[in-house]
Image 1: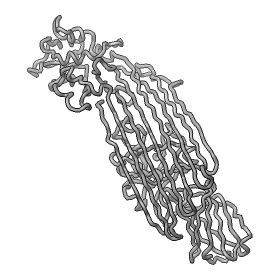
Image 2 (image 1 turned 60 degrees about the vertical axis):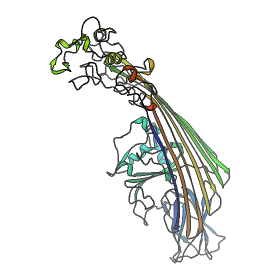
Image 3 (image 1 turned 120 degrees about the vertical axis):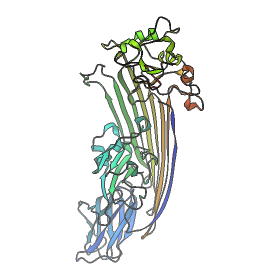
Image 4 (image 1 turned 90 degrees about the vertical axis):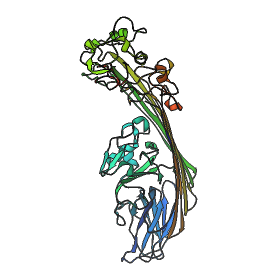
Length: 551
């Protein structure tokens, strides 16, 4: 594979939105709303509503309007208590109200007449999240669902395939160009790149390929909402769907986790129809998370780490020139008679000077063999495997690909007051991919790549480092006016280099003068595809090699 370097992708986004209190929550927040009435059904005006987070202790406030309606907006996903106070009525309290991102939990309350010192504790009830103020079609995954559902390789984007209308599509990029493992998903027949991905309310998608940049670790995610139809105008880039992901934050209690998953080929059955033995595979995924209060009820911290160590081996049965071919065609002085390709009798070899004439018996005069062909074919190894058909499947080898990944996330939340909330997160993902070649790396950096040089078809070194910074704030200017600001930055940096980067094998082989000229990325061995059924080739002579072996 030739070297390549994907240029750094940079995305900045800064949004400030002024919303009425009756508006629905933004993509990373939820709301609690409802109607407050007396036992006779009359609306209660100017009642004080206090909503308190069970895990963080933060409080938000609202008042009922002339119709008795209230709405507490921009609440981080959590479980909340609600307290209601009104003149001439008993104080009402209810606990355990769940709030999900980009959704409204509706709580209608009826107050009894009495003293404010009398407290009525309501029995916890099922909370209605029926949408009466919008028509978006979506699927929500909460923390419990993300923990309980099985997922291969801890790949978070696999959950997107559980959404109605979502189907996997053929990836245009190879796996080594998408080491974060983002699954390309087609939503309702729309283009894959039309799905917007947001992490904590800021963009998390490469605008060129549509790939997720930070594929979050499972330990860092608190929930996901996948909207497939009728999403809001705030998602102006979306033409297929919107994936909104929220990361975890610390709480008033310290908590943590640790895990280790290991998968090997132990106990795996061999393929009875394969001539090659079972190749070993090892994959180990491990990590931990930790979070808690830096200042109780005010400042919270959460961080996690996930590492991956994988070694995959593939056994390959390939074809190389036979001993007879090497002894007659690759001699340094071309002595000892013609180049004998008689073992490949099933493919006729034509004289390139006269395409109507065949070389009798597939014997090519040594005077017709080019030095470039000799230099090139000398790079191929000798046969090492017995076969009934000469030159077919006579070389057995193993290639190994080593893949390592290190990812971490850190997040800080600050409840500055009942009106102001801030958050900041930094995510880092580093991937290293090292793939070997079936024929090895020859002297001087010259080498050849067979059709499948490694498990993913990659022979070289890949280094990818993705980073993302996300921050935001919510400030209640008044009971009817809210300011919501976000800032996001991500960097998608991918380098893929072949093992012989910087060498000049094409010049050494004398394949094509000037082919290795120019910058460093042209100084390597070009990809060579060949067919040993004819061991010929070059100038459009049917059939044969795509490399030249005759003048």
